[in-house]
Image (tube, rainbow, N blue to C red; front, side):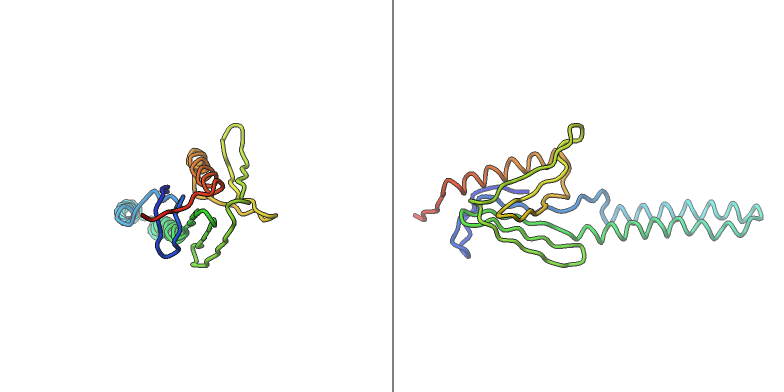
Amino acid sequence: MTAGNDFDPATAELTLFSALLTPHRSLNRTGFLVLMAFLSLISFAAGVVFLLMGAWPVFGFFGLDVLAIYWAFRINFRRARACEEILVTPSELRLRRVSHRGHVAEWVLNPLWVQIDQKAHAEFGIEKLYLVSRGRRIAIASFLGPDEKASFIKALNAALQTARRGVTYNPV
């Protein structure tokens, strides 16, 4: 997430806020390969022990746990392709959401009319964030944790307030 006052010559507007939100991944590709190699080695060693004890049918089941973990991580890596991009300029708030399957949804809202709504839990903090404009309610920042959502909403509110004050860019 980045916030700043950058000038974009393509749109000839000042960028008040820009954020790229992605899901958290606890393990990178190298870590995944190391984990899978370790699990395969342990599973194979345990299977050999059972094979030597005469319980040969058990040997095949030790590969199933490794396959299940591999499958779960593949789903996790595929879902991590999703992202959400939020851009605020004095004249528009642009939300672009890309699903893990590559489907793109984009909304362009007037920052003068946008309000931020939140659903909070007393014990857990902010659970959901929404952009509300002219009867539309769009969920945002679902990838973030409660503390990150609080920081995000503070920065986004500041950018919306700046847009409402009518900041313009005067090139020298």
